[in-house]
Image (cartoon, rainbow, N blue to C red; front, side):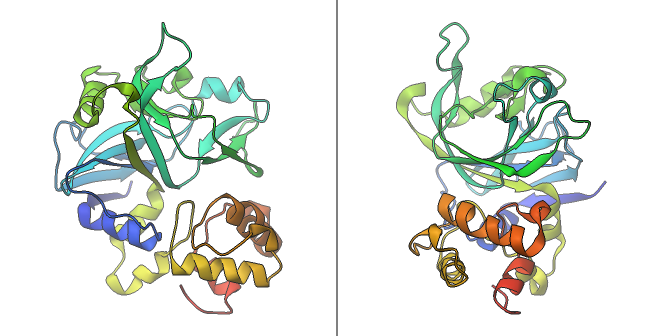
Length: 304
């Protein structure tokens, strides 16, 4: 399988290419998750490093095949985990529309309790703050069908970042972001205690960026001249290119996106980009992410 090195410089490239208006603070913590890649060294969580070697893995709803990282003072600590729902919930979804998968993009968590409403089971973790864009998958299919028509915008605050202590994802996630602590609960203590400020209910927030592993590997291996090909606009993107996209969508008749605000959020995705993708490329390509290919088609051959 493909291996690549994740460095602070690569992370800065990823944020820039995806139009995330975010400066990584030197004295605070930022979270970064990569879906479909795991640390080569299982001890990559024990300290902060200049570089983390990752290996691409195909994701499923059984195995922990993602990495959730902390960035601090331009160094990285990597924890094996999952950003997918567990198999139990794919067969027994709590929502009739299916289990959830968080989309790539810029999200926000805060200090708080997982299992908030159950005092006997709740524990200090990280709770959803912002609206989360999700895809849902129907139950009991041989292969999970992440139908683009099941796009959901979830704001109930219980898609959280917490731990899971079994060998497989199982019941530990119905769509949450999960650190595996199979070998030792000390792993979760490392992750939480490093960053926690005061009480769980202090409302301290943390930025959380989620990327697909294959995309990150491609950027890692790209030459400087070819990086422009990996520019994208997705959930949480901001800036002039987002405004240009909004203006173009309005000119094409997608006026329900509202006014131009240079921010890529729910209205631009739901009423503009996804309908355009469905009409131009077909339902299977309607994921709400504006790649260079989509931009090239929309803007008559131009690049971002």
